[in-house]
Structure formats: C-alpha cells, structure tokens
Length: 298
Ligand code: NAP
Image (tube, rainbow, N blue to C red; front, side):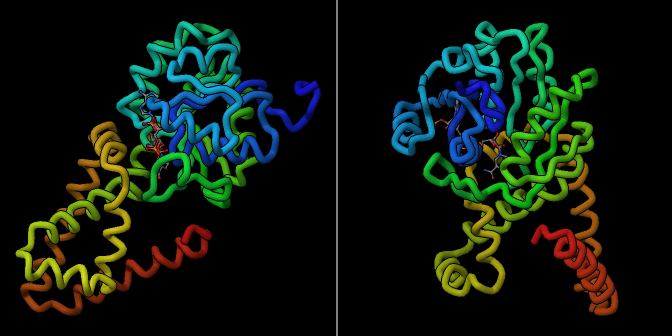
C-alpha cells in the first residue's frame, strides 16, 4: 500500500497551475515517488493535456476545487494575480489537516491574501523556491531546476513546526537548501536580488526598443557586449513580472530609490571625469561577486 511506503511524503498533491515551477516540482515528486497521487489543475485544456503527455499527472481538472479535494498538500503555482480566484475555488474543498503552500516570488501579499480565508484546521506554509529561468510552461520544466538553490518558507506565527517541516522535506528532496524567514524580510531581500535586477533589465531593453531603426539593428548585431545578458532576463514572462513588481511595491520602490541615488552619483562622476570615484565603486562591487561565487550561487 502506498501509505506504508516511507518515500511517500503526501498522499495527494494538488498542483494549481502547472508551468515551469509546478511541472519541475512534479517531475521531482514523480521521479522519487513522493506522492500517492498527483492532481493537476491549469487554466487551459492544452496545459492539462501536456501534463498527461509528460506522465506527470494522475488526474487533471480545470477546476481547482476538484483538484484540491482530498489533497493533503495543495501547491499553488500560478502567477500571483490568480491567487484570490484560486483561493475562492479551493477553500470549500479543503480538508482538515491539509497544507496549502505556494511558490510565489512575493510573500507578504500571499500571507495577506490566503491567511485570512483558509478554514480552521488547514495550514498555510508559503514558500519561494529561488530558482528559475526565463522560460514558461510545463515543457520548460526540469527536475534539476532547484538543485543547490535556496527555498525560503514563510509560515505564519503559530504554524506547528512539524507542518513546516513536511513542506521543507519536499523541497529538500528537490535538492534545495531550505530557510525559514519572516515574509517582510523575504520581500526586502528579493526586491534587491531579483525584482530590481529584472526591472532594470526590462528598462534597458525597453530603451533599446525605442532607438532609431538604424541603431537598433546594430544593438542586436553586437549585443554580446553585455546587452545580451539583459535581453535574456527581459524575456521573462510579462504577466509574472507585472504581478511581482506590483505585489512587492513598497520594497521595490525603496531599493529603486536607493539605486537611482547611486546611479546619479556615478553619472556625476562620469560628467566630472572623476575616474577615482568610478574605480572605488567598481572595486567594491567585485567583493559582492566573490561572495556570490563563494556561496556557490553563481
Ligand atoms: P508559468 O510557467 O507561466 O505557469 C503558470 C501556470 O499557472 C500555467 O499552468 C497557467 O495555466 C496557470 N494558471 C494561471 N492562472 C490560473 C488560474 N486562475 N487557475 C489555475 N491555473 C492558472 O509560471 P511559472 O514560471 O511556473 O511561475 C509560477 C509562479 O512561480 C509565479 O507565482 C512566480 O512568481 C513563481 N516563481 C517563478 C519563477 C520563475 O523563474 N519562473 C521562480 C520562482 C518562483 P495555463 O498554462 O493553462 O495558462
């Protein structure tokens, strides 16, 4: 019987949303037999057909409530703007003892949105696997996506440690390092490490888009000078990033204003020909790069 199998962490995992992140986690679950049953919900029949074709779903449904029914883990893997609709659909179907988790890139808004609507006896353990690519959809997924990266869990106060541990163990099986964090702190850190860099990439590529045609052609042709790396980041899903930047508005605006101040300082140094100032700034930044490499996050 499946529930006697020690590798089974959950009897039924319901994935609500099945794109890059959901399908990647499902690949890990399938490969290691971590769930007795994988239920998949997406918005379109096309995605459900792909989940079936990839042999990642035991059952599929366009109805999130149907997928969540009988689940001991519901993993929300949709863009953040779909959460309130998903919550309304799953709440009537959730059973006592069920854990609701997610993979969303912002955490305060998730706590606000889901924390107040889940029924008593249902646990909330929001999460963020800090791993990904600029690609979307179930075919873009990979069981190796999470290996060696961090997963941050932000359970609300009062969540039994054993409940958080069950979700942590799932991510550890995906070869992630797990850290429990306060949601506000998560959003401040990610505003700097992920949200601001994406905003800057979108902005630089947008600047190139507005160039006159004769210049634009040359920018694409000679993009290897650094621009190319920004175009990869700026090719990320527009809906997902719209949602992230709006959901983490306060923390993003805070780091953005600091960035603008620092950029102005560099701008002035260039105008005044103050090479020493530029050199000091560019030397300091190498330290950060060394830290990233030492932390094996390059
Ligand atoms: P994705 O590849 O675009 O997949 C999103 C999935 O959500 C699709 O299967 C879509 O269904 C489904 N969906 C959208 N609205 C829905 C609704 N109302 N009900 C049910 N399903 C719905 O997105 P992703 O890259 O996996 O990102 C998912 C979440 O992970 C986001 O919240 C993001 O913040 C977070 N995240 C992303 C990354 C990354 O690098 N991509 C990294 C860490 C965390 P259809 O396919 O049928 O349209």
